[in-house]
Length: 340
Image (tube, rainbow, N blue to C red; front, side, top):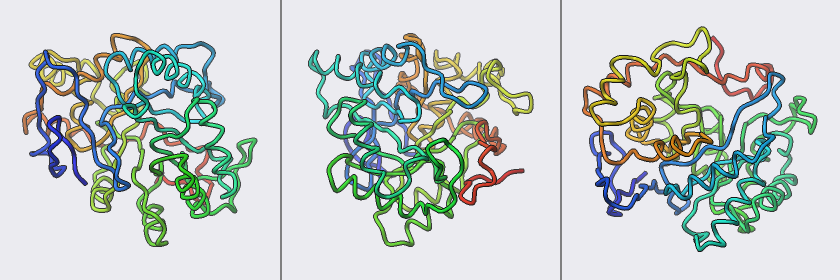
């Protein structure tokens, strides 16, 4: 796996080499990672998942996402991450259509979306992607992911008899039709990924997983690196914010004196330091916000780098704590996580 610096010169993803600086006065250039399929994926994306109601239903009753995507594109983002299940692909599409009409080029923007669990039959995959493309008002996406390895009925009850290898064959079908440039997976574990590789089918280009200070998943990360699979980090802030942290969530929080000290040294925020750490690990980060100032801050990550001591401090917070275990699916045979 290679990373392209702002200069365009490739270098291996090793932490001691993954250091670069872009002057604050320069036009923002977001570095990219090279996908095994041949494309390049920007290392920062706007995440568009805004949460759930207590019963698990996705909340989206305003046009917040549409405006957030506009803010992001105006701030220099070149990657938007979304999903059919979020219920906001249409908002992403309206924002993209608006900016394209103003002169933004489609080929300059990387769009990721995801196949939901109720469309895992091979023959369902292409129609599901076509529906997402209709929502997004696009002819193709840059990356299409299987959202979970878990197959379900349309009413979101569990379905045990759809092999995710058949789903993966449907993903390959979609790519051959030109509906997506690359295909990948989300929330799969190492054994499940190895099964795809061993099948002799096309290898996933990317894996999207929860990744943050408390959940760094070094073994899975190493496996992906060895197999030329780009890792994408959702929930990159983990439990940093006290208002969002569960009672059993381990430290740190956003007011941790050590993190505050690092942030002040670089004239950054603690969330920016956390994002920079994940980028130095070699991940694509997916911070989400609907607030203009925070959206802008979340991409201002390329004018500083962590010292080895600072990097190791952040690395020490890894406890394996998962903020989104989705235990309601734990009885499913393809549930990907180990429960304590």
